[in-house]
Amino acid sequence: MNLLPPFKKRGFFSSEENDRIVKAIRKAEETTSGEIRVYIESRCRYVDPFDRAAEVFWNLKMDHTELRNSTLLYVAMKDHQFAIYADKGIYQQLGKEFWRKEAAAMSRHFRERHYVDALLLVIEDIGSALHTHFPYDPAVDKNELPDDIVFGN
Image (cartoon, rainbow, N blue to C red; front, side, top):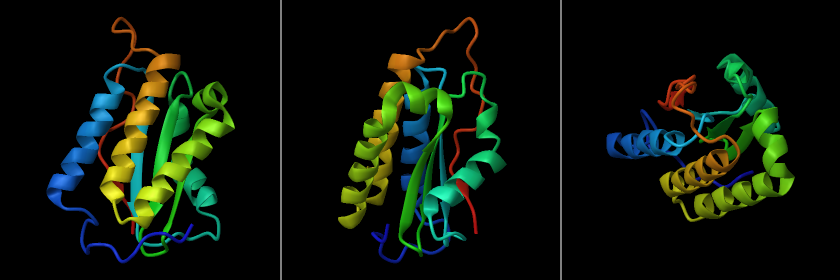
């Protein structure tokens, strides 16, 4: 998708914006065993950002969660592309329409240049869905993946 204008140099987001995204991830994961990650890079090395998101997903070992319930939000800033990639456990629970709706919400916010708002909204929605289908169990659940934003090239 070609929706993003030029990004801020060095880190893409301000320190405050980065903190808001990480806090949203942590809050979303408080009530679920699921995991959410955000990966930001300048350029997508594939024509289809979904293919790149899949590669990043595997490279970050996001498929190693016990319940296969992790989700990656991938954004290529200079190429104006993004994708949402969910592991099979959560993808099957929520179905294609849920993911299509989330991608449409991201697209709408990105067109309006509200990048952080787009990520925050989708993180919250995915967190709620994960809570419904994969509720947190303090006896066995742990944070399986880091919550920080991953910045590529």
